[in-house]
Image (cartoon, rainbow, N blue to C red; front, side, top):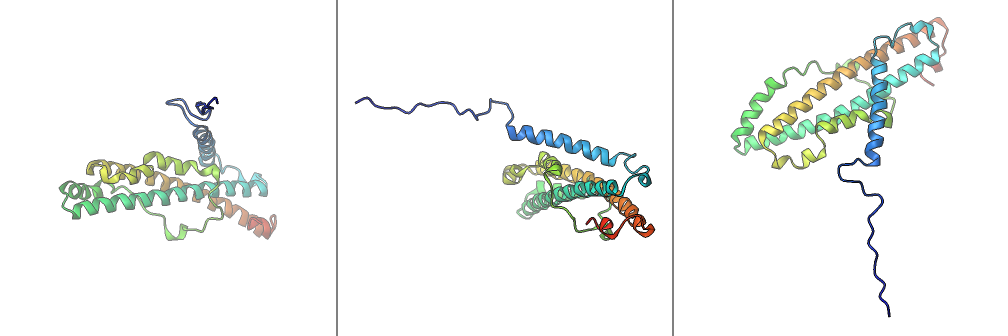
Length: 211
């Protein structure tokens, strides 16, 4: 009886060495669209001549600013969690007697002294949006600075390397904080415009509340 062997073929889904996956290509394209929208929202002309725009336009502009802010806030929370874990690892090493970790921790306050003001309590707000795919580029930007593999392998990294990652993450956190403040300024300005229209009787309550 003739034996039937198993034919071994290469999977068509395999990527060539050095290539990118379909998901990576999609992410890059999405990130590019997201960056263009953020640039447009932050452009100095974005809020020009609001009085000439329709109420629907003002609401759309407010919503896209809030969507961007929700993506940035989510990315900041992830980033701050990574920072806490890495700093805790350096503290653990110092307490275990690592002179290198002790030296690094002593230098971190001066390296991170330019953090700038934190978000004022009055500006803290409950987001109206879940984090939509269109603003996930903020999260991926944080991952490019320090992905989950950094945390998984931090025990094998030198003290100085961990310090460099902490400084890079802190710099990214300042960048995101600045972007968030700018977006909140725009949200406030657009909300004020809607409130003004309500007072003048040119917009109803449902429009003001986004209903």
